Amino acid sequence: MKISFRWYGKDDPVKLEYIRQIPSMYSIVTAVYDVPVGEKWSMESILKLKEQVENAGIKFDVIESVPVHEDIKLGLPTRALYIENYKENIRHLSKAGVKVICYNFMPVFDWTRTQLDKALPDGSTALVYYKEQLEKMDPLKGELSLPGWDASYTKDQLADIFEKYSRVDEETLWGNLEYFLKEIIPVAEQCDVKMAIHPDDPPWPIFGLPRIITNEKNLDRFLKLVDNKYNGLTFCTGSLGSGSFNDIVKMVDKYSAQGRIHFMHVRNVKLLEDGSFEESAHYSPCGSLDIVAIMEALHKNKYDGYLRPDHGRMIWGETGRPGYGLYDRALGAMYITGIWEALEKTKGKEG
Ligand SMILES: [Mn+2]
Image (cartoon, rainbow, N blue to C red; front, top):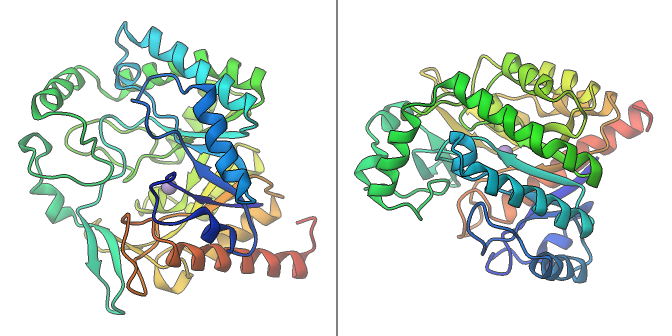
């Protein structure tokens, strides 16, 4: 297992120098942030990023994300150009030594929460998803701006995209994903870069838009679309674990045994009775997931891919990008590292 940490580039208040000071830190997880979705990333900007990261003494192995242009998800004729750009990005990143690329296939919206600063009883704040709040939200009214919501769309553009998605049901979205994979996976294999899809967060349709990377049955179907190890998963315990229908330990065990997990996002969520959830500290008793059992499954299957602590709470007065402060994620990294060390010492390095 290789511990990694997301970094949002030079404007991130969490400095590379701080990330390096977390014991066990191996690789950064980052992206080129100043290029519009769907465009090519120049070799120059990739190498500049690599140099910054390596100068801080950390590896530059994992990209999260190379975003997928909406025209690819919609299956529009213009996707041809964006798919060619995507292939070129894989080639460029491979030349810079990147091993894993994370991406997702969620229509329009990335991860969605209804509140970003919910105060928990211990005085920390966390990201939450309350069903009741979500039902009152209407993205087309444009009163809301949350991370994961593409602020670059105007209200009219968003209405236009929603109109286009009215003709894309789940099966059409599956077809568009299959088309995309059949184009890019051979390139990823040639370049020895593992593609790792991130599950939908939360793992159910929102605002009437389809979502398909949501549960075990659908992950099985996804992996069979192109049955090749270069077509793999970012297994996000918090995203999939927001649905009580997902048996996370069983799924981690199954997909890591198949060698199809290339990147783990480990975090905990506390499920509430009505299908709502709150993000919690990584420590198992704070949430609904058994983090030790998840790590045991990975260890048993000799997982040697990348793993990062995922969203953290805001603690100790830290301010910054919701979910991506330094302190709670660093606690998460050390908690996971500690579990792994205990597993290696009690069960042996062979797993
Ligand atoms: Mn995640």
